[in-house]
Length: 234
Image (cartoon, rainbow, N blue to C red; front, top):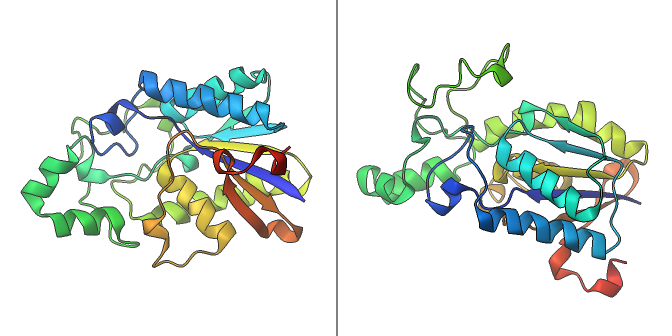
């Protein structure tokens, strides 16, 4: 049996401000840093260890990983970063206050943009405040202008198949620090969740999610480490 652990980054500044974030790079809040530290301490206390870590190109996920690894005494572990693990691109909603957006466009329309499987939000206007064209980390990458959850899954899964899954099949213990929607993509794939049900899956910040994987990386069990009695995770 192989273990895979997924962790959504700790609370970010725009989580706190209730703004659409997507690919825009924002920092962790002090609470987010504490969530990351607590996650690392919990993983260490439960005897989890890793051989390789993966994260996105976004600071909030990278810092969450580093803080958790420091709490585990594992800052030396190899880490691979890739844009395919970035959060869903919220396009023209990026930076907007979610409550104000509902007032402007209506609750039902915003619900469609946020929770539908295959309907993306409006596209990001080129050369605007949140245009990442000149961000060096994305040089040579066709940056999306907006993404549905379906688009995000299609972006994440090739990286899973090419890099993460082969490591697990070799018996390596893997930790992935990423985002709500890029992690939804992995959970949907591993747990075979339907297109209808996956948008409603909520993944809390800073909570290690453990997958017990069997032959062919079939998910035998999925649970949050904080919810599992200690005598069943040692």
